[in-house]
Length: 241
Image (cartoon, rainbow, N blue to C red; front, side):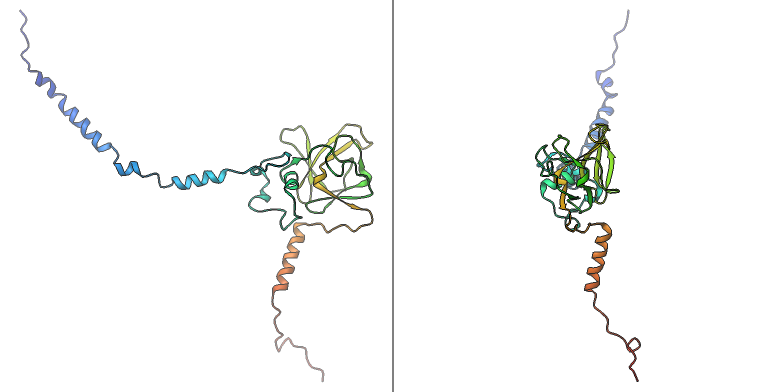
């Protein structure tokens, strides 16, 4: 006949009591204090400021273009056109610096045919001669050739078009298209009127603003502000006998 176990239930619980005590003590030790929970991370404010600094306002004028955050490095942190280059309106900045596009058939030079030279509005660099301008019907000024060495070409990121910019200052002008058979040269520079200005034939062209010229002007200004030292006895001119 099987015998009934006489083991006390408390004896079984005694095996678990140490584990229960350890679990309670461990929870008390690992629990964070009220001060730690109440205090934010030390760098939370700095991180928030860094995130706010990443936000860049978009210019609400013009059509197309690239947000300010994607401007070239030369324009970051300072206004490139003031005072280095000619002062620009917000619309001119949107096209020349942000690569925007003015609306078709709104530019002042679309149907403009007068002898003279078309310059970059930002730096005065001569870009096109009136002899190379033609009427394309596209709604923007069209030229089938540029003044040699004045235009820089670069393929758009999507590879669909070739952008043209002023080689001197990098201002956006428009795009160039080939193979349209509109002229014998088979090329069409589609230029924003807002990116250029016109000087009639016979009128003196303004000086081109370049980085080298700016350095020379700066040195000239510094030399004007430098006091002239009085001559020393050794350097004074000798008196005639």
